[in-house]
Length: 270
Length: 270
Image 1 (cartoon, helix red, strand yellow):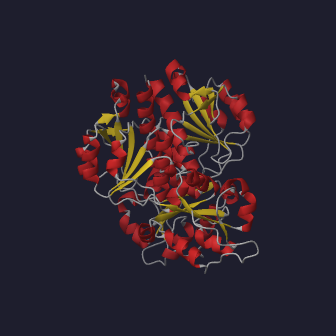
Image 2 (cartoon, rainbow over the protein chains, first blue to last red; image 1 turned 45 degrees about the vertical axis):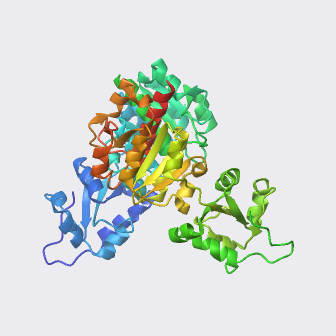
Image 3 (cartoon, one colour; image 1 turned 30 degrees about the vertical axis):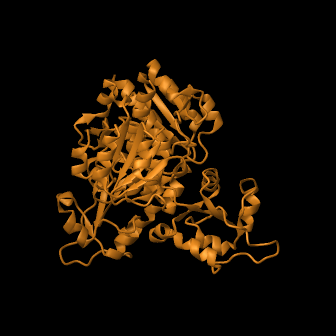
């Protein structure tokens, strides 16, 4: 936590205050990677970030300070103008509080060393909202790691942080550019690798029936536009389709991830 | 289907052509209800609308005509300028084809007369993207009716139509402003009414275990911001919670709907 340099009566931080300027740059992935920091916006995310010990500094508006007193108790923070908050925030109607956090992804090896029993792997997902939803859904289903594999969106993108509704701070988040190597490492760690595909040879219900979902499992999800790359689907232990009972062409990513991860959660607990 | 009034060499329809002006108005709910029509944008939606016999007229750009020849074969259409398409379309990068369709919602009684075995009820959902995802997920899970109850978003909102990925044309879509009366009608029709709630007394896994999900079921989903109204939750046959195994506060609406509807689909087919 940085010091709170403002004293009562000091002027508010503006868009031109160097620390605000530095924080605004964190909207760009390159700057996040360079600084090793990212932004967590809104009271829920800031609360989870504080609980995770990830917070470097907090900016609040005067209004945000009044609204989030409990959250800010004991924390150091700097009061900023509404204009400064507008430039820091990703939302159209900011909630008045935003934290600069340390990037908290872990290496793949470290995540696998904890012997996870349920892992979600998002492969080449480009939409930050989808990425955040996968984090939230995986967390709810009891997965303990989410891996962003291949040329995927940065999970520390502000829209992803927001869509994750705090779950980004609950799980091991891994960035693994080499998707094929990730698959091999998952298998070496004793996880069964299941590739989701609308044309998968294995029906999810059959897997649930034969009891094999109770094993430690890594689910691979592709982007909504392109699905999983063929080579990765073929390299997985099985290609699994969620049954489509009606006339929909497919499920969206969030729905498919929920059905698959919850099928595993149920099997692993029975 | 209206006549194709243009002949080869005729000028393209512009933003000021009366039929384009009339169609652009359909972005507003009041105008949709007044005209009894709505817009379906992009080749997938137009294809499903044509298959459903719901199309009144089609607008294409010259580029869209070149790209979607197969889709447009045998259909009457009018060629519009890119500017006219931009005003008709809801997307930033329109796909060059849009259809004016008849509103195709059915009265609650008509939907219930078909003795549906799986129904999704979206109560006071305001977000059109969520509404469309519920339609898509319900269709995939084999539900045959989706009811928008209470003060809900209009399912014929362009964003909802798009998010439904064609499923709007596959299901019985019902608009039912009186949510309490809807619940009573569902029960009278022999459907078990299950209210989703993070604090529900019944765990979804227990329902799946006791076999009762095999019965004809209507699932009630509330908005992500507010959940279901208390009185409706209490009036349902059971309040059901999707188990949260990790530290997430909740699932988002799309994920919760997918898990619940697929649990029913599985039970009803076993």
